[in-house]
Length: 386
Ligand SMILES: *Cc1c(COP(=O)(O)O)cnc(C)c1O
Image 1 (cartoon, rainbow, N blue to C red):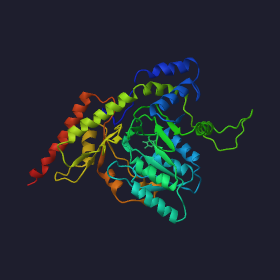
Image 2 (cartoon, helix red, strand yellow):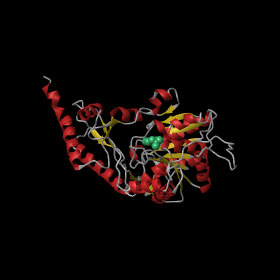
Image 3 (cartoon, protein in one colour):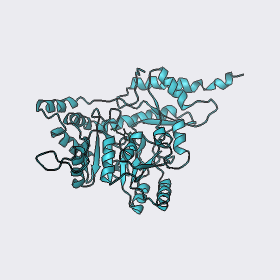
Image 4 (cartoon, rainbow, N blue to C red):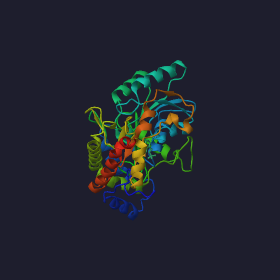
């Protein structure tokens, strides 16, 4: 499908070329160089706090390295929220470990802290304490961080904070990606900023950062020849990609504002329809970058559904997407333990992500509004059924 309006397309600032050009001119085109160093510093300054950032080839690679650094071994159990992109949990399988999935709570759509504690108690009782907790801030919405951190501390299980979708989001004023023992952001093409493909890992110490760089560059021991005493990975970001990232960091806050404006637009658009809930912050403690604006339908007389709106938009070359299908329902994770009920499943069945790019124009918003209203106001079909 050739969409005229895409869900979340890349949005260049215009300054990327300057940094990429410099890399090419100086022949620093490999996974080393000034752009990487400066990009890492930019992210550290942006996130604030005592953090060390390692630029990597993807967010998925960052989650994998976080699990390696947390000491996750084959046969270990790792807890992950079910309502998320598969990349949150794939690295658990890369490690030969076993995922344990947790349902969401309805307010933030993220991991339910109560079910998290239930699951931990149950796993400990059955003889195995989970090795890590993967917490996600879905669509940019911060999860119930205080409650989850409290559980993590109580049982002394480290948190890998998957903030791939939440760069620029805040919880109680603090940036997402800084709460976990390890933090992950993504610069994939559909994320709030992009390096064409890339990610970063945040760690609390310089020692862990050095370890992350060592592991991401094939774990070469200090020797004149190629000597390896540990399993390594080729996960480092290239200096070209990091150049794109430096240009993108200059506009990150602007893009957060643009995405938040999109959310405002949808809030107003759907306001008259009481069977549509626009996914929004539960209180002022939560500040979402609104990476994607989402809605959830409830049952209604006129039989309007998420899938119906999806079709109406698609026919008009506008891209929307169902909410992530929960991982406990995915064939690749079949028969994995799941703690919860139907919250994430219902959000999946009744939810829809709407066009949310930071480059969405006013004219495009108007055409989206026309299509949405036409679909919803053909509501009165039941009257025609005699
Ligand atoms: C995009 C994404 C990832 C993976 O990031 P990549 O850079 O695409 O590898 C992981 N988790 C979530 C929640 C994501 O949305």
